[in-house]
Length: 400
Ligand SMILES: Cc1cc2nc3c(=O)[nH]c(=O)nc-3n(C[C@H](O)[C@H](O)[C@H](O)COP(=O)(O)OP(=O)(O)OC[C@H]3O[C@@H](n4cnc5c(N)ncnc54)[C@H](O)[C@@H]3O)c2cc1C
Image (tube, rainbow, N blue to C red; front, side, top):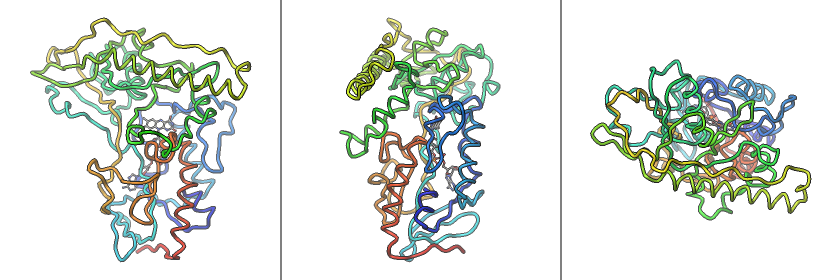
């Protein structure tokens, strides 16, 4: 957004509570690599120029990438500046920070979609003696006690943590709810390449049937490993991870898992095959069928005939529970009445209903790719145009 505003000669400032790339520096686990290939992190006027376009950035590489971008575009960032409240005063936004106040006619909320871990209510009943950790707190297996680990959630985060923890020699049980399966490589190309080229990631928020539902769809079960391996439930089962259904409750110290595991997996297989059908259809239509490998399908997800429906959490078999149940934004500092009952900002494709206020970086904000690094550019271009039109009144920002 900063680059887009600069292109339009709009004076602006970026307020950041930490340093540039703060979320990647402070909220991710050590071994994480982006699940999007290097070529895919395209920011306005800045792309990948190295010799490994299909590789996946490590955290230090991701941080370096963002720091370089901030330098290249001379982003006017005020680091170590925490916004403590935003409200309307005298027809402008009054932005209070721990480094003084700002008054401005327009404001872009780009504080991220993943500020806090989403923890299910069942967490409250976890028996004493079991350590619990969110994916945002997890850094590496040195933090864990010896013994069994229950990872709750089987999207990108949960499957990656289950694999890493299992490889450390701890028995892992993975509680599986709704998830979206995908092959890492399909017909010789990265699945992200297919989704990008076939226009799946560009699908607009006003084109989908149910945008509320689309915004809740979990991340693809993908990992960015040098081996380009598919990290689905079959891969985890083959390694020795035990699958159970959704973590539904705790009764008398006993975990209860939903009986829907088989259904969830069947649904996920179905959706994956639908995506692959869309890709095959697109490849046929544009005539590249002969240039890529032949279509193929993964084996259906294997599920035990009768996966465990319960587990005694007081037996000592499970020492740690990791909540990999998603993330949510934190707008607790926003004192403009634009939040819905769930604390989410009400908006139409990033245009918030308070004039001059914009939102960026949320799931499916304007496009399917909106919450990816690669989605920020197109959304920022669209919203900066709206913002520029709004600014035609000519009010400017001031700091005190
Ligand atoms: C585990 C994980 C893996 C991911 N992997 C990928 C991936 O492989 N590829 C990909 O494209 N995307 C990935 N994402 C999504 C990724 O987080 C977003 O693409 C990207 O970070 C969005 O950038 P952003 O600037 O909108 O949000 P953020 O990176 O979260 O940046 C928001 C910034 O706002 C600051 N901030 C928040 N509140 C305040 C406040 N009150 N005052 C001042 N500053 C504040 C934060 O410190 C932070 O620096 C992943 C996300 C997670 C959680």
